Length: 290
Image 1 (cartoon, helix red, strand yellow):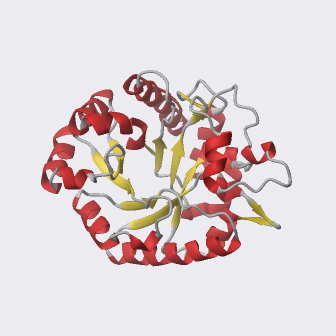
Image 2 (cartoon, rainbow, N blue to C red):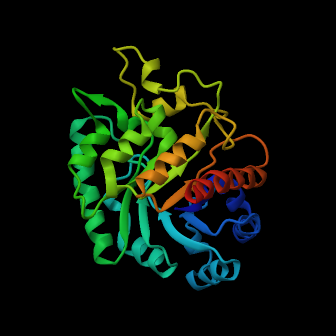
């Protein structure tokens, strides 16, 4: 199990100084990075701002391995409307082994099944190019539909040969599910996880328990009304039981990358991800040694 950093953790810093921020990430001690595609302030792809050879050379100079990339579409855009051939080619040239679709704005059975079919098409396209394809969860996928959930529908209706899952453990908790149990069910379909921490003040943890039976909010409303800017905290300072979690993950033996994603919006983010790395080294490497 290797430690990684999802660069969304420092997206504001990347917006201001892309290469300078990468330098700080490397100085802290991160070796593996999961890319984000664009400057969120301008919407411009970093590969349109800087040439691919220049970006790749910077990764090499800093000793950073770009093992995966988050590539999605804006709300309201169709998944297949993006130029996926270009996206796949660019990330392959940067050395990425995997493309991760970060969020589908699903809310019911029909759009979930339609999304599953689109994910199947993307997974097949990635596989043909020699890359793996993953779906990354948030909380809304755990909305119940009868005796199942939107997430379970995605799992059941995507091709296990072409579509894997990058499980965000805290978002699973916020969806009312147990991350370890879900990992056991997914087996080899999940070998990358996102690790964040949730503040002890957050109550309830399960977003859906805050809703009445009559409530049926749209996807974005869940995040604008029930998720607050200070919900997420530095690793080891919230509710996640790291020793227990990483002992179990090590026992599972299926996780290749445990990826820090610091979504906290308070304080110095460079200092925060440095603290996060120390926590991960303690528990990830400690679990492996034990």
